[in-house]
Amino acid sequence: MVGHGVLVLTGPPCSGKSSVGTALTAQRSPIDGVPIEIDSLFDVLFPDSDRNRRDRMLAYDAAHELARMFVERGKTPVLECTYSRREQRISLVSAMARTPAAPLWIVELEVGPERAVERWHQRDQPRDLTEHLVRERAATFPYSDHALRLNTSTSVPNELALQILSWLGHGPRSVPREVWAAEGNDWD
Image 1: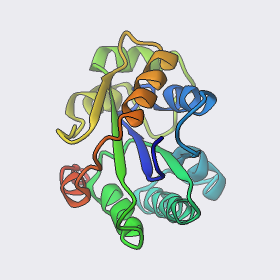
Image 2: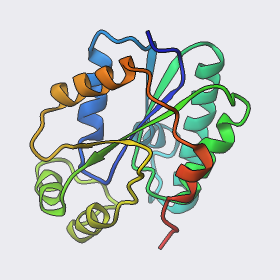
Image 3: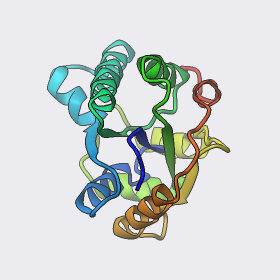
Image 4: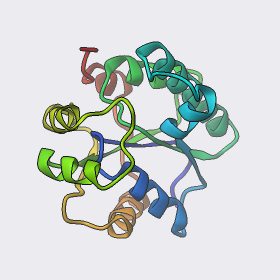
């Protein structure tokens, strides 16, 4: 049985984070997980936003405070968003500073640029993404050597969720928080 910590599902746009997150929370799980989808929280907090950097960071900060509160109550928040930017990662690490014993588990969902663009065309397209940006972000995502990396190009979400649960069942090490945060990209 895995104790509580923070599980982050991260990856470039259209890598399958939402689909895998939904499949993960639908499974019987060794974790007491609470899903926090940052884009959904963003839409609730800032429904008329142009998705600017300031509003985006406020949504990340709010999600991280929620995550910290869940950890303090013995739950495992499952955060789902890109986390490509250093500032986004630092926000999570800062929020977790009050819970230093809670592990931080990172699952990176990898997708190639062409598959990401194909998925982007198949869904409602967020206002702040273009085909060019989806391709670029898939090609330049800052993957970490400390995370579990799963390729989503050919796997289905339920299979990936089972892989994540199996990995968690083996008691993975927490990623080094500051190292992971430093690996993020700067804002363009």
